[in-house]
Structures are given as structure tokens and as C-alpha cells.
Image (cartoon, rainbow, N blue to C red; front, side, top):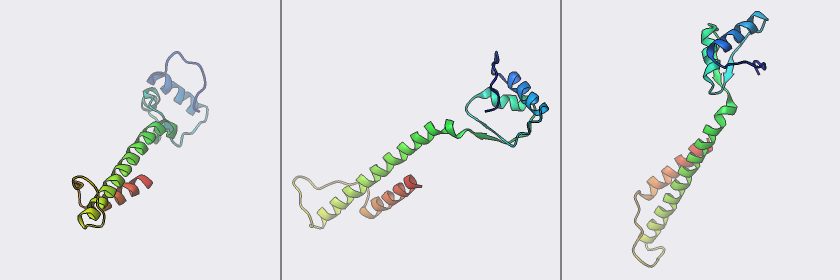
Length: 125
């Protein structure tokens, strides 16, 4: 927490003055973590502070969750594609039989398996 005092505004000037006041009181900044608020970052520029800025991890969680879901969907899709390619390969070799037309696949079995391994590794990492 940087400053827990009421203020009429959260703009660059208000934050710039707050930073300067904190520095005047002896606070030395090593870095600054901030969310998506533009006033905090603009205040750093206005106060001409030379401190590294980094994102607040709490504010990154929604983006990370969406990315995790997208990677998980891609991994499951690759797994389904590899399973379908495996069934089509077994059917083509006469190992298994099923009613109806032969399975149609978009990628070969080795390619589908490679894509599955890559998608799962990407998700796991």
C-alpha cells in the first residue's frame, strides 16, 4: 500500500505530489507495482522518479486464468485429434472395424501425436 488517505482525485498531479511528499518524508522506492490505473504511473512520470515499474500480480490473475483456459482447450483439442487419428489408423490397418464410412482425419497420426505432446507441454509449462 502506498497511500491510504482520502483525495479528491486520482490523477497524475495528485499522485505526483503524493510521491514527492513520501520521498520528502524519507521513503525510498526500489520499485513500484501497479494495476491498470493510469494515475499511479503518470504520477511517477510527473514527479520525475526513476524507479522500475512492474505489474501488480493480483491484477494479472484474470488474464492468466483466460490464458490457462485457452491452453487447456487447445490441449484437449489436440488430444481428441490424436485419438481420432489413432482410431483411423487402426481402422485403415484392419485392426478394428466399425460401421459406416471410414474416419476422415485432417492430420496424420505422427503429426497429431506431435501436436498433442506440444499442446500438453505448453499447457503444463
